[in-house]
Image (tube, rainbow, N blue to C red; front, side, top):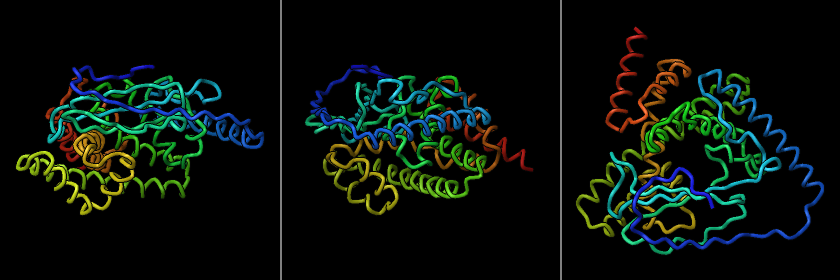
Length: 324
């Protein structure tokens, strides 16, 4: 077991996780194996092409996803986020954030349930792609839609310390919109009109999601300030359907998890990813993406939300003057 990028904090909760490893005992079908090998080879070339493009717009490539699961034993991650019941990570980091590595693809691991976390909301997610040299491109990744693959490759490279070395919730809030913006530029560069249209639709949906999330989090904070935790959870879950795009995102990502249990952790997790999405998108409308990436990379590594807010405001003022 490998613990990677763990937020060092004293854990006051006990988590019981049932992990079932699916063992595939039948022989591989030769035709399927041949097709899988071809898809992995094609994805390997795509990764090289996307990383080379990223470098042209100021994204230093990393070793993440540079090998396929045929070249390197695959490693998957289980991420756990915990937030004290009745609270949201508005200006401070989440209470607990940890990552646990497994020597198998996500598809071969099934998390049965998080049974009990006293005093905490908990949300978990599994994945094969992450910002580490041990992250290998799997067949499941090769079969993903092209837009998602390109976004993931650029997103994980942006996480490299040579690009963005900030603490997790600041870094993620910048890397998420920049990865989506970089994917748009990639499809413009390759003159792939079909996937550019798909990437634009995805980008606009993420932008709308971020606006809905910020409004929902504002309402949720007021509810928790007025109600006891359990009653507050119910009220917030009742508000959720009014936020159509975010509600769809929330429900799809917490499928199989207990909605009241995940609520505070999930909202705080998503805020870390989408807090600055719309603001960064507006900045990208004012200046070339390469310039924006170069300027955002100058944000100090120890930046908090207050200093990041001020820095984004200064960039907006700078770009506005340049447009005059």
